[in-house]
Length: 163
Image (tube, rainbow, N blue to C red; front, side, top):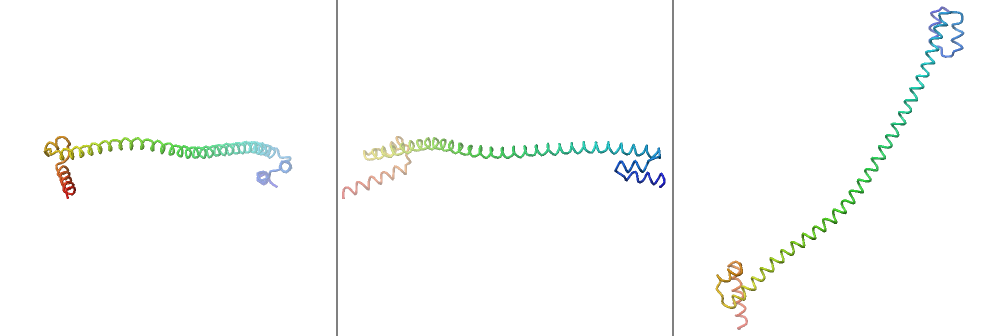
């Protein structure tokens, strides 16, 4: 086999013993074989190192991914719980505020209704005593229509009692 053919075969061989037999006696090919074997060993070391780095990166990314997922799950759970508690607290506070506001409005409405009822009673008493409508308007702040209606009702009652 020629040197060129041996060089081509040399590039394809991987076993050291076969490479040594092939180049035996040819100083140039022995030097090339030595360089190729040296390169192959260096390449194997680099490949192993790169594989180790890749494996470590995969493990690290996997850990980070698991941590991220666990954090998201915990955050989601905590958020859900916080929302539930917030709704409960908000509902309770809303009821309390609504009760206070309703009580306040009820008192105000009752006060106004009491004043109107008192003014109606006052107007009835004044009408029964024969007071003038202008005076009743001044003391009660009732509308003239309301006072006239009250006067009509009092007249009807007097007529019913007299019959």
